[in-house]
Length: 295
Image (cartoon, rainbow, N blue to C red; front, side):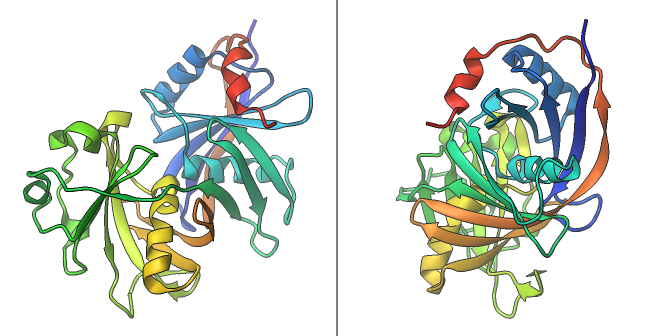
């Protein structure tokens, strides 16, 4: 016998409906099997589906699946999971908690003065300067000012502020090697930027392509902003920057650099639907959840 799971869909890093990055959030009564979670994520067809389980010790554990694979870190689905707990009256305004995840402990909190906004603390990694692949500039259609690798697995390309990033034709089909796992293409926004967030102009914008993760283009990517925000903060000489993602479903976030390897992202989300899913038996497998536990 199987019982329906409570689930909802949050459009993350946007204040308006039908924008941002969609993430389904599924509330589990027991630790589900990875194969079932992968099948369900494939059926829901969101950039990521987050699965939440609260163990007997009261600790919230969190895992993320794209339509084709499990990932170690996902920012927008972490924001969605935080807002889901709020909607389900399991997290109160101003309250903080830690999710156990495959990327370690992730601290999240609900903003006290905004019913649909939350902050999430994500790990970051130093960018490692590389020589770009010889064909990447031609593929993107413009010069590259810099190119980096990261331990997260993403590559990052900096293009001039004059580059028409919004008009860039999706290059995913032609990306090769490590660029397929995740390519951030970013640029400065010339002040005063017309793109605003929390009533202030944004400092930079990016797009993110990850065909190796089953995502030809991810609409708004928290992990990508957490990765590049320290570089922008150092360049601009302040700890807080505002980042925008110039996809067809655009959105953005406030990025506060806490340490060289930790960034707090603050953003809003919109609940598109809230209900239950009848997806058959989820099975029972604690083994895959052990790596999410906190010490």
